[in-house]
Length: 457
Ligand SMILES: Cc1cc2nc3c(=O)[nH]c(=O)nc-3n(C[C@H](O)[C@H](O)[C@H](O)COP(=O)(O)OP(=O)(O)OC[C@H]3O[C@@H](n4cnc5c(N)ncnc54)[C@H](O)[C@@H]3O)c2cc1C
Ligand code: SF4
Ligand code: SF4
Image (cartoon, rainbow, N blue to C red; front, side, top):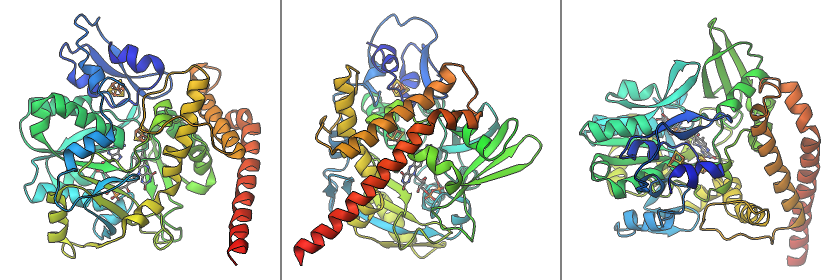
């Protein structure tokens, strides 16, 4: 079985590109599908059916591994290591920022600081991260960089599909030590590939994970650009614009167009609706149980905690799993404008409560839904469960419906994804229903809070 029959046919591909990079016959190429996501396609028929593509696929069942088994093999024996079910293994957790990188970075700039420092201190020879391309047909891609200045061009988050096949082929061809950034499922794919490929095992020496709630198709960017008033093609986008008069949580997207114009739109002016209701989210993300990139040496995320999210400059949280990264941070803290302090792991978990609920409790119900409708879902660490309350079940079913509908707009070729009025009209009743459900949900939680306090007194 190849990934085409195993994963792509069931619409469970996240587009990481590892299968295409490792195929011994070189018959897989990464291309856009009709939903604006990357998928592998067969450029010539597979004649050997060796199955390697499925063994490295994070969404195929063939590897027989999950984030628990991979994490244990990598970090289980690290001296001083601890474990939490939500985060996987960890040595320590930090909160802070890099003053130099903060203005152009997504959060506190610690990821870019770390990548630059790995190069500067000779821990790695090359850094693989994501950077803008200037190509309107493919706004971002993974790139291999050899200097801190180049690495800095990749600062910021790309809420846009990117795939690893090209850069992994480079790693296989060009000797050296590499650091790679990636979302949890991409890091898992790299780990699965490393188990089966000696060069990748020896050459990828640092993995920097990003906490992840969901990925978006390229149609998401077109939709938000239209919301921001962009007419014509988007040449570039910065997803995490900061402004001194807005809290870090109300960041803006800044789109550049061919005429050099810039169009901004803030999170609370329409992005939140599309993001929170999972419009243009790949189906694979509905079956993901890794919040904190459990297979990465270090994971970076936003400090979504009340002490930090009002600070417009942005603040990072970090989970460190590898001893060499811990030493690097300890040696450089308070130098080179890096300012970080230890923070209890429970606060890091608290900062991602929403994503954890989505990837644990809500995932159990989505797995149940898939099974009850005869659909195929990948094997997860969470068991299918129908036991959620009625309100949450209705909310999840409505969101699943919206996610599906948003991906069909282009598929059916009825109208353009930039026809925002039509899209919102099509979604109207679901939007109203969800507002009502969320209000009910909120009232129920307030009621329970006061009931518990009353019973305690
Ligand atoms: C799709 C997506 C979903 C996310 N969801 C959450 C979430 O739910 N909660 C949360 O706290 N944080 C989430 N993050 C992470 C967050 O947006 C920041 O990337 C993180 O806090 C690091 O910030 P920083 O300032 O330290 O990094 P920066 O200094 O901005 O550096 C980020 C590094 O990551 C690389 N990068 C950017 N996008 C990608 C990508 N798509 N794939 C691989 N590498 C990339 C950049 O090239 C850069 O090297 C998400 C990120 C992405 C891309
Ligand atoms: S998820 Fe990655 S490995 Fe699996 S089919 Fe898609 S591109 Fe290939
Ligand atoms: S939600 Fe999971 S599957 Fe989707 S991009 Fe993030 S890590 Fe990958």
